[in-house]
Length: 148
Image (cartoon, rainbow, N blue to C red; front, side):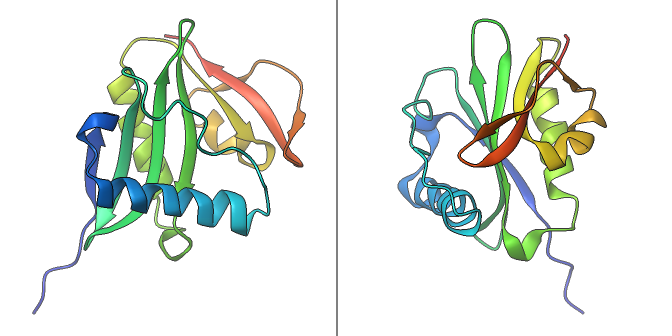
């Protein structure tokens, strides 16, 4: 009998990412945000390598299954680029990753821009809408924040 495979959590700054992992993260983001969601947008926005940015992901058998990043902005820790690989969806990875992100953030305020259809998901973690819905790259988004 073989043990069940499990997802391993990883947390790293940009400088601690090896090139193979970085490539896998960027490929997943491009596959989902650019190709699947049909959005031509600047995913490589110059913020991945900022000193305060933290990258969190789940990996299994060397494959990135879910990912997000936390940016250290002046007013809040900004969660973004939340993505789950198509073959890993429906397994609760995004929720587990968000829980881990909030642990990393600790008692500081946090913010994110949710795709509108996911606002209820983020509300389960204490995020509340802070402004009107808007279109970004053709997709409705809602600004949300969670106090410290």
